[in-house]
Length: 382
Ligand SMILES: Cc1cc2nc3c(=O)[nH]c(=O)nc-3n(C[C@H](O)[C@H](O)[C@H](O)COP(=O)(O)O)c2cc1C
Image (cartoon, rainbow, N blue to C red; front, side, top):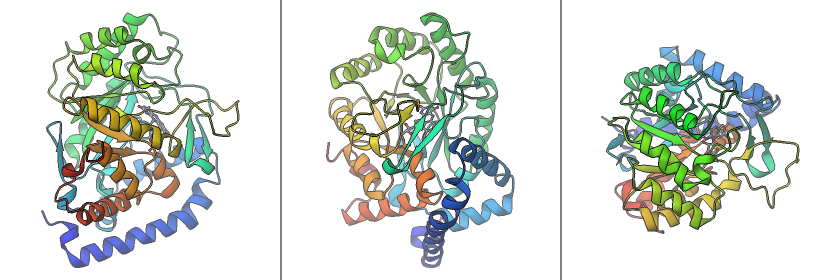
């Protein structure tokens, strides 16, 4: 395959159109079409827009020609899965797998669909989102709304097999509804979804750290519960690698206990980290419910990535997520120990061309520092 980076004219067009998207999003789309309406409405519109445009092949071709930056330095293999680049959409934006075609053509290395649950789930009462632009952050209180793992995994499998190059991961969580029962009920809930997902996506992510549900977080607050959960999940035969989405707010000794448990199970990677609960140092209205995304998760998340890489780098691959807005920040996640990098908030605050800005910028930083492959930089500062 010819790389955009090695084709003078394609590279020049890609760079110019990325700049155009950046300008258009900042000065037109964001102020007049996204940030001028409530965030819940903006989210619905964005999903409908992606669903509609994804069905239009000429438009997808145009998107790819304009935005998709490919470069050999970005190619990587993690947990046995080949990625065109290390950047992925983190779990939560594309809950029902409506955005896969657009993300594939825009040049994402992978996307995480979900989080999904064994039963369809309405989620928490609205509003689900509050914007905190002064912190480049969103307050998220969705509570795992989704169409249910039966339907969504079917869509994700189709998206994966139809995709040009993008890998598809599926995030599995526990249903958040009135039928929530005891610990065993919760374990069975995860097991059903994992059974449905087995071998139908490139990766699976088990979300044990959603901060917004009525069942709480029994699997990240108690290592014994986590051990019981994964003893059951180990019985589900599957070829694809499994990541676990870890909580942000635990002190290292408690965090390490969870990693110790996971290291004894069929788990190949950890995603660091989920939304931040602690609001210390931030001015957020008390009545606004939810966990924080974006910049407030950057520094704390990186500290956990570095520590995890130092102590478990031989055992787990790390997917780093939280507050990645610039190529330098993506590079810092990688140098701290992340083999893969995910984001959501920067798409909302900076626009869809973020994927291209991050890829091109990261490739330049890697070359500047003498790396031929992104994998060579993983953990270099840990
Ligand atoms: C709108 C939204 C919905 C989210 N929903 C989920 C979810 O369903 N499952 C999950 O594991 N994380 C969820 N998250 C957390 C993100 O996957 C990610 O960990 C967090 O937002 C930090 O990344 P960011 O700073 O790039 O947004 C959600 C985040 C956002 C902004």
